[in-house]
Image (cartoon, rainbow, N blue to C red; front, side, top):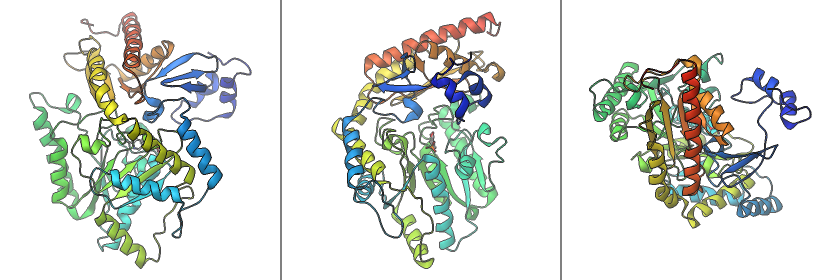
Length: 465
Ligand SMILES: Cc1ncc(COP(=O)(O)O)c(C=O)c1O
């Protein structure tokens, strides 16, 4: 398929180099150009409507249409003060307000907020914070970072190293030294025969402890973790997993960094994934739904103990010599602050909780389908994992790219979703109605039917399917 001459897709092929894209394919086919949006829908340059079942990139909590209050907040701030920075004790009024708001809504007592522009930058900043803290505390050997297989914490050199997905490392010479990956808490995939979910959680915690002991507890600084692993395939940990993991971290004075970049601001049915899963982080990172995706903004929050270490070391060094031009950008801050007000006034987190049973019912209704191995979800985030053999849980040959093919078929049915290998991720805007959730899964059902037919035609199905 070559793009129509003079179309935006053709221009995209000629001039634009995308992230997470096969550049050769884009050069020949052109990009999928979105021109406008409304509610949970986006429209391509020919006016075709698509439901975006992933809220863009897990961020468009309020959908893709104009939200007049956010437009007004941005315009008002642009008129009053379009730019100011946060270096050398300076800041803008609205950034102060946002910091106060975030600290006050934290799931556990937090002391201070620091602003960034992306989730990757926020996690990178935390890595520097942890190094700075431990150097200041006179324990320069306590620097190693633990993350998990299948984690997603970003793509920059440091945050990309935390990410536990081989594709993000391959040919980028990552991960960097000092990053260790422990077990992924996916019971369906990594639980052993006859092992209960509880026993699996215990094994994950024991393996974490073994890793810490093997490396030396005085060399391990922090563990980064998403409450629900998003881009690794929407992996929901066993019930007692966090309790057991946190007990190990506490025993060896290892900081817990909750990466709330996807879970934060209502996605799991509470303000924070940390609340849903009983996590008590020392440091948090957040982005995406902080501004409902309307403008780039991210933040980290640190507790009092971490803050005091940073404060004292910054005094010793004259300054915390880390800062980003657009940190706490006033227009992004104003939009984020207004987004949080909208969430509150419209009771968006309650809405997620109320809609979740219907979302999960529709998600789980695919459990008996011969191609479906597992349906998993919480709040308004979920995934369906396809398998070649339901009984043995054998996956399809990766070269078939079954998940990616299903996504292409879903696209033809006007649905945008994300494949993670052969898991299909769902994360609709939090403003979706029950009828829109139904429409999402109805479209998915058609794509699943097409996928089954395509696999059958190619002779790729197990006898039972
Ligand atoms: C949990 C998590 N952390 C960090 C990031 C990186 O955020 P960004 O793409 O804004 O750099 C992402 C992005 O999807 C994410 O899902």
